[in-house]
Image 1 (cartoon, helix red, strand yellow):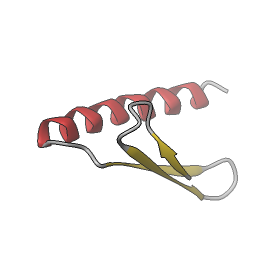
Image 2 (image 1 turned 180 degrees about the vertical axis):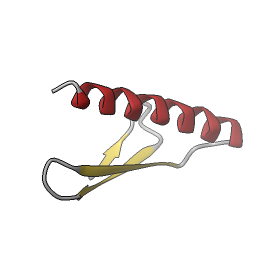
Image 3 (image 1 turned 90 degrees about the horizontal axis):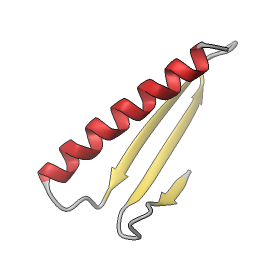
Length: 60
């Protein structure tokens, strides 16, 4: 899935894989970032966001 981020300047490529019964994998690439600091900030943001998603899905 390709998404234009809310800033209108960067984009996301989101990949989904079926890993069998009740399992999946998601990978996010956030592109067109302007600096190494922005890359580090988005990397931390996405790690935290995917951790929250994992926790929410694990409760079900």
